[in-house]
Picture (tube, rainbow, N blue to C red):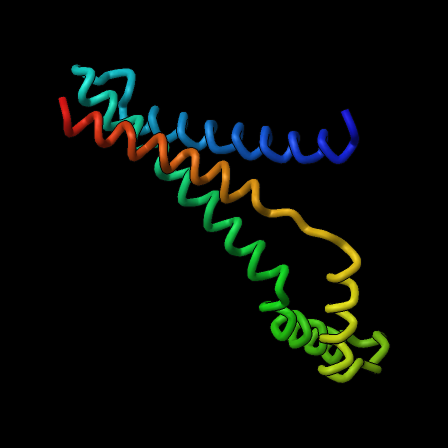
Amino acid sequence: MSDELKKKLGSYIITSLTGLMMAYITMSNHGIFEAQSAKEVIFIISSALSIPGVIIIMIGCLVWVSKDGFFDGISYAFSYTFKMMIPGTDKTMLKYKEYIENKAEKRAEKKVSFAYFFIVGGAFLVLSVILLVIFYMI
């Protein structure tokens, strides 16, 4: 296996395991081990799978927006404020336009993959909806 394939597969596995851990914690907090009927178990599992699905998709949205430079203005403001308030630091600062251009150049050099957030989060949501449909059919 190539290193790139291992890295992609690792991203999927880590994201999936994190989602499963969130789902397990949610299920145990909702009392899946004390559930009386199969219908109640299905509902708890469906609810527990939807939470990591939504959270993982929202993280993917944040990465996507961040990748496009949405937060560059905020990071410029914080770095400017930090440099002006801390004594002994170099007070020379790039102009905003130069700062944005430098960030865009650095961003173009490295490729950020974030599709796995949407794929894994979508899989959790699809499983949740399937179980919810089963819950209402019982």
